[in-house]
Every structure is written in structure tokens, then in C-alpha cells.
Length: 324
Image (cartoon, rainbow, N blue to C red):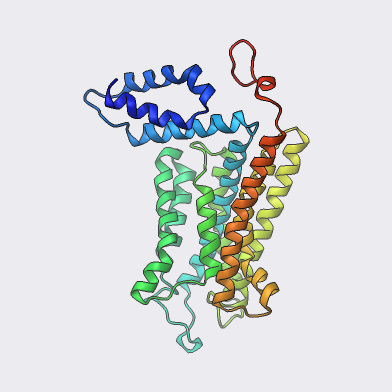
């Protein structure tokens, strides 16, 4: 057995044991046939493909075959929401408050996050105009830049946006990484109008008769909550419509979006815990609580669905052993 074959077999552990017995030799043989001469390690794409396929099979074996479609639906909704929010925050970046309001701008911009918001808008243009395999790296860049805003600002002394702006954007970005390679056409068409409409509304809302239009203005503080309400209503409508047809991926999408939805209302949750004007410590504690509760709720739902699923023998074809 070659080193390459041995390493492919290790990656095959991502699949359930019975599936490995039935199809393992065929899968590894296919990858070995496609591997270039002299290769000793699986390519990153092959490794990711094997792990992804193994996780899908484990979910199917557990009776949660609609989980992955639910994640993809949540990813599309999260990307639309993140794009709209990035457009809103870009308006603030391009119109920093005057210095007498006690806010330190970063050059001509309101904060150090302007590159992250620009990356989100570029990713939206990429998904709207290019195939997903070319646009996905743009999405990764946007998520990475969003994650780096806070640590880079701390190291350089630049002014970052508030936590209630960065945390939900990062959570939406992590969920959006589950986007299918070919998103639905309706979502691709809606990306650019959604961003343009959000920017136009923000430009009117933040600047009409408002002397202070920064991140800590009333309008900016209310924006994540408004975005969360729209996202929740849209997800519920889709979930109910799909459930009416016997499709429960909308329920999984709602569970996947639980963490971003909680973070979009993190300021209101912190106010409910400590009163008005929560400080940084209260916002951080609330953010950590929401960030842990959302994944825990999702894992609990998967465990319950697995326990309630019928035995595997009842869900598999008696002739070939594949899922019905």
C-alpha cells in the first residue's frame, strides 16, 4: 500500500463505517486514478471533498438528510443580510461625524473597518456576476477582514466599529461560507439591488436632519435589530412555506441562523440583563453567551433528530444498502 493510498484511507474515516465497507475501496480507487504521478499527499481539494462527503453521509445515516440543504438556505439568507449591512456601514464610513462629537476618524473614514465593508460589497458583486467557485475566495477574504478588524485596531490604536456591529457581521459571514457553489438565481439577482437599496435607505436615514450619523447614533444602534427582524421574518416565512410541502430545511436554516439573529439583537439582550446603556463588559458577556447558546441549540436539535430517526435498516434499500 502506497503512502498516498494510506492517507486517502485515513480521510475516509469521515464516512460512516458501513458506508466505508460498501464503497470505500471504490472511492479511494477513484481518487488514486485521478491523482498525478509521484503525488504523496492528497490535494487540499481532495481532502476537503472527502471530509465534506463523509459529513453528508453521516448526516444522512442519522436521518438528517435535510440538514445540509438547510445550511445552504441559511447561508444564502445570511449573505444577503451581510451584504445589506455592509452597504449600510459603508455609508457611515464615507460620512464620518465631525470631530466635535468626540469620535476619532481614521483618515477620511469613520473607522478601521472600511476595507472589510468594501470586501463584502466586492464579494456580493462577485456572486452576482461570476460562478460560485470564482466568487467564494472573495467571500473568504471578506470574512477574514471582518475577523481582523478588532485585533488590528487594538494593535494600531485605530478606531474600530462597536462590538454590536462587528460580532453579527462575522457570524453572518461564517454562516455564509456554507453557500452552495451555484446559489439560486433569485438570490444572485437580489444581491446588488439589496445592497443598493440598503445604502440608499441608510444615506437618507443617517443624514437627513441628523447632526451625528456615526456608529453610536440612534439610527446605527437600531440597524442590527431591524436587520435581524427582517431576517427572522424572511426565514420564518420560508420555513413555513417549505414545511407545508413536507420540506423541513427551513427549520434547520432557522436553527443555523440562531446565533447571527441573537448577535443582531445583542445590545437589546444586554440592556434586558443590565439596564440601559450596557457597557463593554456586558456586551461582551452577552455576545459570548449568544455565541455559545446558538451552536449548542443546533447540536441538541441534531441529537434529538438522530434519536427520533427510524432504524437505519428501515431507511435503506434492502438490495443495495443505499438510503431510500
